[in-house]
Image 1 (cartoon, rainbow, N blue to C red):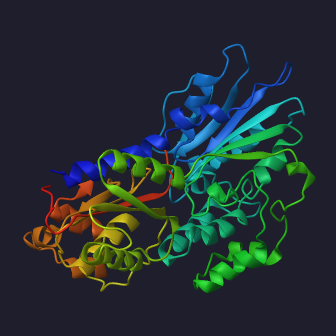
Image 2: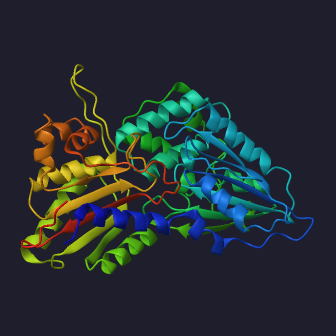
Amino acid sequence: MLDADKFLRSLFDAALAAADPARCLGPFLPAPPKPPGRTIVVGAGKAAATMARAVEQAWPEDAPLSGVVVTRYGHGVPCRRITVREASHPVPDAAGAAAAAEILQAVQGLSAQDLVLCLISGGGSALLALPAEGLSLADKKAVNQALLASGATIAEMNCLRKHLSAIKGGRLAMAAAPAKVVALLISDVPGDDPAVIASGPTVADPTSFADARAVLEKYRITPPPGVTTHLQRGMDETAKPGDPRLAGVQNIMVATPQMALEAAAQAARAAGIAPLILGDALEGEARELGIVMAGIARQVRRHGQPLPAPCVLLSGGETTVTIRKQPPDAPKGRGGRNSEFLLSLAVKLEGEAGIHALACDTDGIDGSEDNAGAILHPDSIAQAAAKGVNAKAALAANNGYGFFQAAGGLVQTGPTLTNVNDFRAILVLPDTGAAPY
């Protein structure tokens, strides 16, 4: 009989394996340049260090190789020829600013015979925290924190980040010209747009200063005075399509959310459960997506549509969480978008039998907590209630972590050293096939 916990975790593991840099990066590496050309490796993101290690393992020992990458604290791995720096995510810090400056310096003064290998993955935007001229790191941090609490999409956040940066929005590639630039990307964004991943340091940017100002207006964010002045002045635009300095840049996707979902679907078939991929780029409020997914799961269980149970509904993408205002004396809610999605799903399902779900961030960290996400069972609401945690009250307080801590469903993997966005799997069992867990 199917063990729901083991089955759901096996799908998540299959998704992570598909996005492991050691597995997916090698086939896309270019050949080393001919002497006297050098190879300079730079990069940023939660997978930057493991990507750098994969390059080192595949690169000829007699070919010159050096460089520097920056990753999140706790996500570093030992490298021999490439320097690994660590910095703060999602709120940038001085270490990130220093690492970004070091990366920018590493690509200065190169020739057309040289190769710049850029290793870009999710989280790179906050890690490449080099403010534009006239701005301070405190300015960037204030805007970033406001964006994270606003419900803004990742594309909106990155539009603003590019226009407050000295390295994003194609600026890194412009600085490397005339060297050949090959960027290898692991996508953590809906739609896999390379201009959005880590705010596109090697990609032309179609957005403008006016677009950045519009994001602040939309979410009613009042930035520090220096940011307002910088955006209104509108000097030093990001790289635009057609810029000759980007003519030789190659941006290559080596791992995507869709690849991870397909790997999970294959694992489900191997276990005898039919998979249905609902989408790799689902966005919107996490709690609203939970309501929608509850409706789809019920349709499967009650009517066998769009396919009969047993089956598993797979999806990826990146939802958002808008922090609700609470009374001053109320406990602070904890948790990220995956726990919020699952808690909303739980409230809507009301303990309906035969429906189990997992939702996790593939980087191993849901928001800023110590869990990747959680697993939901039909009795999760009852388990939490037995410990004094009400599901609806927890959802109102954005306290998904607290709910699943009480219900016993937290999934803790530690840093996975990759990142292809969120992974969701909803297992729907027929009336006669409820599994133990």
